[in-house]
Length: 223
View (spheres, rainbow, N blue to C red):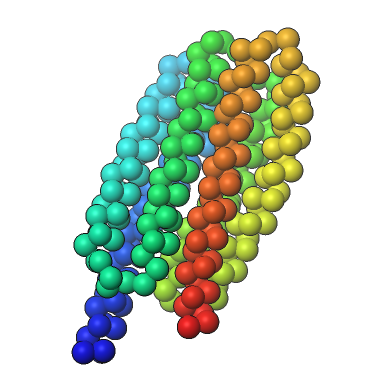
């Protein structure tokens, strides 16, 4: 009976990790869509709008996958340990992409209103997004290694935390530049400030997700 239970749990975890991996992969695709949008902010409004609509479509796929993960967790019942941690992780991954969508919409509105980008601020935002994706990639890598190499998973989560701390510093720098350079254009300031705030919030949620993965990895390592 014990062997059967362990085998059932192992199969359940395997399918759950596969589903979470797919969810995280979709999130990474959405972040790359966002990066593409940011890279094209100086182009015409129609191009930016099309890129935003593509991101919205990707966001819907993330939300649909999250629903599948949650439904699977419900069906598992008590057949898996740390079910609540897995559920929180799935919700956090969805939340991260919802925040990405919020940032993208404000950047789209910035272009729609024909506001111009200060080159220094634009470069900072681009760097912010690139490092954010670096952190998310570490999260993705650590999640994929969670079952087969939890020690490596813990190491990857440490990298996520390190990048998030770096982004905290960059956020403060960008915030000061925004107030300094856009103080005479309140509408532009508000849109760009909100976009940067959303990006910073994504970094925070990615770190929270990493902490959940690290907990799961440590649980495997210690027990």
